Image (cartoon, rainbow over all chains, first blue to last red; front, side, top):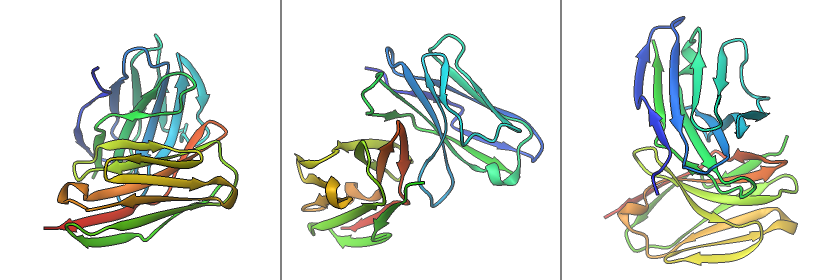
Length: 113
Length: 107
């Protein structure tokens, strides 16, 4: 079984620029999550999708962050404009509907200069 | 919101030693999971353990939901056990992570 795929693995941008991250979950996993992990901290949930609908986006800074999962499969997380404090690893995870057992991708490390 | 506290924050072991990591949480939860984040950043699910005890090789975990804590035991530690161990609790369908315990196993 293929794992959760994420790209790019690393990205360096200047503040006020934009960036997009892509995630392809495990086949058949209906639930997809985006987490933000700042250095030295535990992951924090940004947004959770069930198929192509949003379940929870209460901690997503909606003035600059957006995410979509148009066909209920892969997903894109966008940041525009980026701030210095957005430097973090962005983790995508997926799970079978209702299982609660998450499988994480390798993450996308963002550095904002 | 719910508070998830892990202890100790850091731990250094000699290869072959045993250790216990603790996770306290401040409210009732639907379930609890333990993860290992290796030095390359990959998060691996170790246990899904809302209550009771589970074992997987040299690792075991116990959750006492009524007393709001969970323990992760690592026996005969190996250098490959190094990394950060997180507990995460599910409250209302949202997985909330603790700050982690950073484990370093020396040869």
